[in-house]
Amino acid sequence: MGKPLSESLAEISAHAKEAEDHIAAAQKEAHDKIVARREKSRTTVEASIAKVNEDIHAVGSTLAEPRS
Image 1: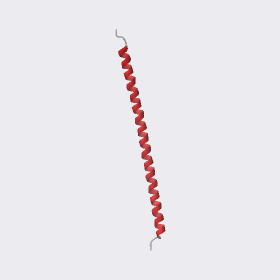
Image 2: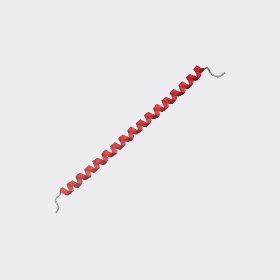
Image 3: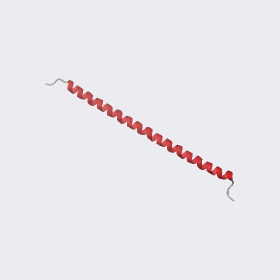
Image 4: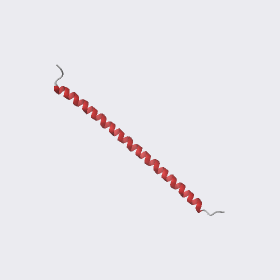
């Protein structure tokens, strides 16, 4: 005869818990990667905006200078 039902259910429960733990870890890892990418993108965009503003200011200063 096979294992008692309670033993089989305990094993199934342990496997289900392990699967839940793996899924939770994968979700956290995916979330952390998304947050890191978002922050990297934000930093890149902010740097690009600063560079464009700097270039606009430089062009404005050049245009404001009197010509000889």
